[in-house]
Length: 139
Image (cartoon, rainbow, N blue to C red; front, side, top):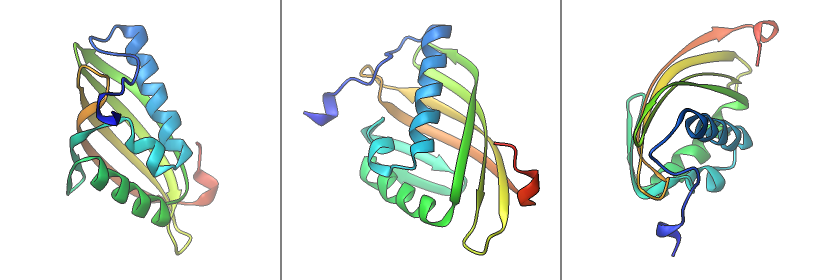
């Protein structure tokens, strides 16, 4: 059953396994594949993304489909900030251009909580965007 599939590494996290989890998330999000990314979350996951609140993997998948239709040439970098038990905190930045061609850099922090199967059951993201010139892209 999909709900019980394990997503390694599993908590409790060590420094090495927390780094692996962060890198796996970065790689998945950079794939811009909503189906693939959504499978890292529990079926009953809870999200806050800026001012958007989501409940469940289905809503996450729909959110990501819309996100990557509007955020073109998306490129993300995540960095481990801290970890304890089944929780990880990350700092991130990403760049994208909108449908009008304006480039942006987004900065933020995420707090993650995982279930015993290594699926993310809570994700709280605070994000700020700034417009940039294409020549200022660094990712």
